Length: 296
Ligand SMILES: Nc1ncnc2c1ncn2[C@@H]1O[C@H](COP(=O)(O)OP(=O)(O)O)[C@@H](O)[C@H]1O
Ligand SMILES: [Mg+2]
Image 1: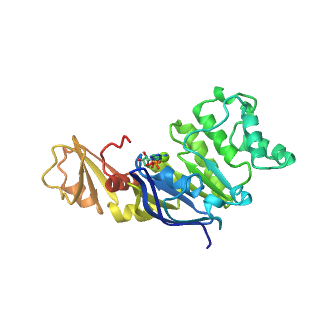
Image 2 (image 1 turned 90 degrees about the vertical axis):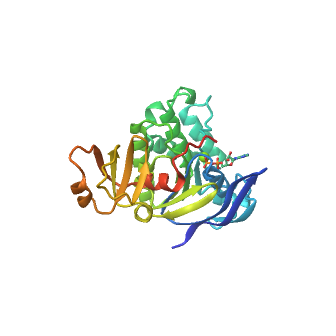
Image 3 (image 1 turned 180 degrees about the vertical axis):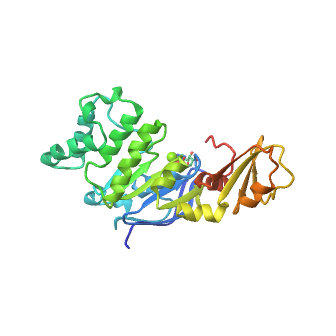
């Protein structure tokens, strides 16, 4: 299977800040790959280098066979970008934003006229086609940025936090459309802070922090490698009978990770207050990147 994106030894420093410190990536056609990491991990910088919006300090990148900083126009047209910040034109209407972008990408007027209503429909924006962007909700703006990224029918879509700050309905709607794009064979690279989103959409995850990849694999692989299958959140004080091999202290309670839950449940005194759930990607994320706040 051919790689659509290949990067090796990718580094970026801003003054004294090492934002990216040696990332390797290989993304195969048709995959959905998630970059996960706390704020300041280097996700946006990595995406910007892949798009040619920022020159790497070191390393080599090939995207769709081209070097991003000198990408021919026809290759660039095969990539759709959803940047972290919405950069729509607030004075134009929804429809005009799409049309202007289509012209910028050099699409023929007939193609724009055909494509715009399809995209408005795809992102459920048809009813607001004539509304000025400044009057849209956050979720609608995000959907419009996604529609705009699709104007040239790209093979590769790069999405930086496509659902941050949206309500659950808007997130679910965007997930559905991203899964539809995946079914069409498009390659997706996305970042998200929502682990359930990553688990649902991504075939492969790269956990990154401090500009480096901590581990990568399918969500199942990562859960299997870093935590045990079951999580018991147990209120303090902890019963003495319990095995405390893999735990995390949450203050008033403790997370206990175990492969086999039955024997632990049997050992638990009846008055113990606890909650049992399967381990998930968020457990892996917190284990790999820690629980301290990142406010950079
Ligand atoms: N243009 C820039 N100039 C200076 N520092 C930057 C610039 N862009 C990003 N950084 C720094 O690089 C680090 C990684 O940032 P970023 O890639 O935006 O992380 P993420 O998207 O994972 O939150 C941060 O410390 C950030 O402050
Ligand atoms: Mg970012």
